[in-house]
Image (cartoon, rainbow, N blue to C red; front, side):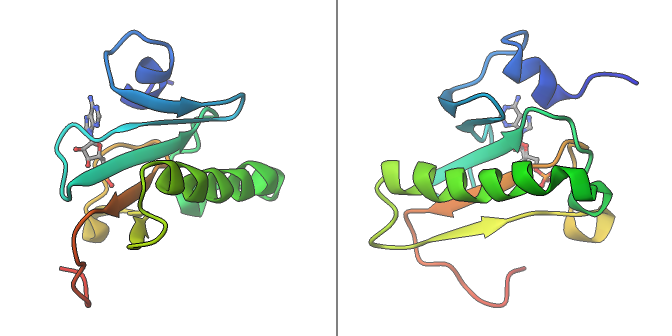
Length: 114
Ligand code: AMP
């Protein structure tokens, strides 16, 4: 299977502003930010989308969320707040088939989302 754009970012084959990385996740700034702070955090394992995660991915999914909160706090968003978004499929606007959590903050968010 072809490697995803985010696998190439993790491998430093495509440049990105990486803000955090450990053995199983990588976080980098979104190239087209939708808020003053817009960071993507992805598992290094190329799970295409949330609905294709398996029971064996439970620990990486938990770690992904815990580290999303850490990255948000390090970006200074923990007091003012932030939103996490996971897009699954065309109606949600998913454009990169490698599971990623959007971390959005630095402005007031509307509800319901567009
Ligand atoms: P989604 O629409 O949920 O699949 O989100 C994909 C996100 O990846 C979008 O917000 C894009 O702006 C972002 N993106 C695409 N290419 C890059 C890149 N080279 N570096 C950083 N973010 C990217």
